[in-house]
Image (cartoon, rainbow, N blue to C red; front, side, top):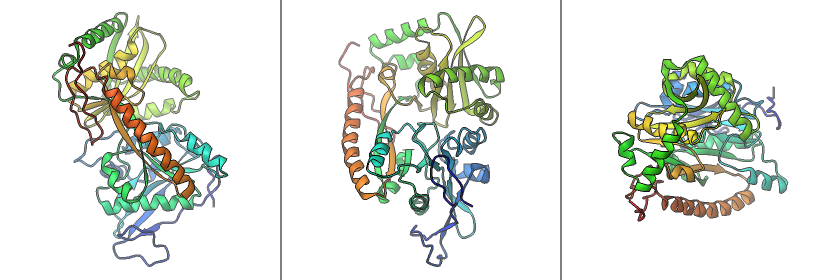
Length: 431
């Protein structure tokens, strides 16, 4: 029976596909002894959490909270991610001939381009002006989460290739215009390049922590003018409020209720309708509390602002902020300064604060390039987008260099992160 994706054409769920060790679809050919079988899950709940997490967060890699089974399950169980919201789960699973799960990919069939943070609305308009239908499209990402992380959940290049081939086949079977892998890891570049997918660069701002002893040691690396400005800013932010951090079993329903109110206020102003609901935050509070850092500000006994962070194996991820009262510089204090202090205390290598960043640069965050990959089966459309991406990549690198030249650091910050940190030029200004 066909399944209807809200707002787009119906389609049939695919039968298991057979992929040879060369990772080519072979439905008409008897499977080889070393064939890889691909199947599609309608929900992450159809896969054992331990089996998913063994692929998503293997012990030799830093823990990524967003690819964890618990996070994806909370998105689905809360109804934040569903066919009705335009995010139909079609997660891809790879098994060997013994039936062992050897690879996976988070994947969604989408009827819009919201909540992705790699903007293709212009592509959609151009494709439809040319007579095509851009939706549905396939999207491998963490919904509403612009954070780079694993998308090909396997360390075996052959299985990675099989997963990519499966996505290309599903693009055709679902009648999708395209497939998109957003915020992929740098380590996955080779697999997507070999499959001839198109690369797109984005720009974010991260704070690099070369194991500072404390916040003061970080401040000592800045120019005198910047140090003075940040100290003054922090003093103003802390004048009228008490700021408290909560994690693990310290988190209560009172804290989540307060933060959700802040989230709703920000969401209503930014997006019209917030993407996440109260149930989502309740679920992650139950299943992922040890990976959450919630920073709240209180005035006269009332919570007035908050910032939600997720704790990874080597990174603190700043995700959501909101407030019900305006306090000078409080946003900067909760989202940036307190995050830096926490990352230093937890000995994490960086803080990821997302896109949009002139104000982040002044507070120690540096420009980092991100990677996305795109499969566009229509040759004419692919050619046009390819030309656009060539120009956009040039502009993105130029913007990164321009931002880096505004570094607040006294000396060049030769940080590296998977090839996309720039060496920050020596600041010749006041020391």
